Image (cartoon, rainbow over all chains, first blue to last red; front, side, top):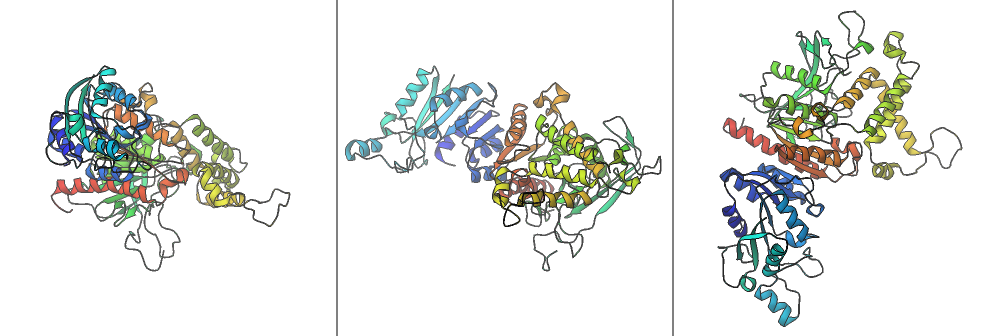
Length: 196
Length: 388
């Protein structure tokens, strides 16, 4: 399993009711349901991802996250997970509130724009960074709301939410993800655990 | 039937008849003392009878869903695109059953059958059927075939409503439910279209209050109109436009009321063929069953509560250009299932073909339905320990 998913896997409590936003091929939910008796749904718009989920027996609902989660009542889930989708949303701030409406806790992983190599590219070379975590050129990127480790922490505070855990990892999503000093500078990918 | 049969066809099939002499109590309060169901099966039932899949048909459907009856048949069964060896509903792994519903006109007991109490045909005296009645009669056939629990119950449109009813009223007998291009209840607009169809039939002077066969006639004109209006709701504006546009049958306008536009010709043809092969009383009864279906209505408009008894895993499928039972109606069902905490997956398939899309081949549709059914087959085979 990808390193970011492995870390999230460890963070999800046994038997939790989980909503996975942008669940991809359902790898995380399949593992959580098989080994941790987790129940819940993935939301996805990619047709291949949806088919893979169906083959695995992961409950997947075709839903565009930019339409919000208005069809889901308050506190339906214990936990909402979103990996590598925050930066493609039209309004990440509204989504954060929505996630913490349908569950008390959420886990969000996204590429950190302030990673030192990204800074080097922009600051020294004067070019939009392209890296393993941000593989697109500026003109065809789906990432319309890039942010930094620190930006996201600020947003959580501004919206009155509590960060209970945070970590960074490399853009390959391999190896051990961990807490480290100066995460805003040395973390290529950021991951946060946030409560209401 | 093509001269060389494709390896993905179930080939030649023969309908079977099951007779039941135990009375069936109906939702309308009446009782059918005895009845027959005509059905087809494809594939082989495994030793534990755990690989059975029930296919429920739509308004004008019947038991002949796949393969051919005769070598000279021009077309295969109505869902041949999805049932067969290697297809979405893989007959190498599943034992597939398709039934002609009670009240139908393709062999099962219906308005054109003889009423044992009078010796006349039932005609308009045949009781109105509901989706629940169909499910109960299908369950009796399942008992007869030794099937305690279906691996999956699958259906589109009115067939999808039967699937929902199975899941709600006989939850212990359904492991998986696939509800395609359906709705949890008809809208006022849906009922309105049905009423136009019914009025077209009932106001035909050849209808004779439903006793047309005793007058050696048929309400052809009424049934033809009913089918024409129905057919418009099955297609999308786009698919009609793409297929016919404003094309004319002749070189120029002829300033009269004969067929001028291609779309008129098409609708008349559809109406004509339907009016000779379908029974008017059956059509009336089927549209009523559609109108009556409303599980939420039986639970103070609380759809999640209506669905609370279900225990199976659901797959809900809609089609982007379906305006008869639009994707939003499937979403209502999905949201209600989610609120009820049920296992549910949902896909909205991009298709230009409107409501009819559920009958047609479509790559993504096959990936979704096939993906879900592959998992169902895997579960069955895992439980029985290896291949069935």
